Image (cartoon, rainbow, N blue to C red; front, side, top):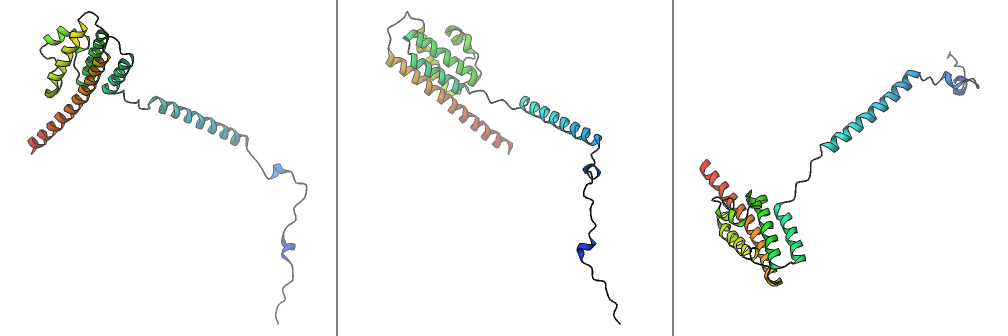
Length: 191
């Protein structure tokens, strides 16, 4: 004989919940858990603030503009104003000396033309191929600087400004060539 299994449904097996049980019986949050959550949020906010300040303080500064960029901007201003030849030559002479100080570390910025030409090591920081051209341009500018105010000659002023721009580019080009030659010599001597 086969034993008989009582027929009950699954619904009968689910316990009945009491209808009016308070929610606090099921959800229990300790006050210490709330305090720990608040402290964690405050510490996280403080850490984020400190990280943001550190990152802002240690952000790399953009590199300063190159001497060519600065001097070209000054040449643009001079060309826009286009003063008389004496003022133009004084401005060009200062711009050239500023470029030489920034690009070739020459100390001629605050020297007079006579001090500059009498200094034994003047222009030695420039590439050899550019020394004569730079000296000739500075001599030409000195002629206009030390003469009484002459009439305006915008064609000549623009030509001198253009010659100055070309000189800057040539100096940079020659410096790159000399640096490459030095690298090649160093590589050959290392063999």
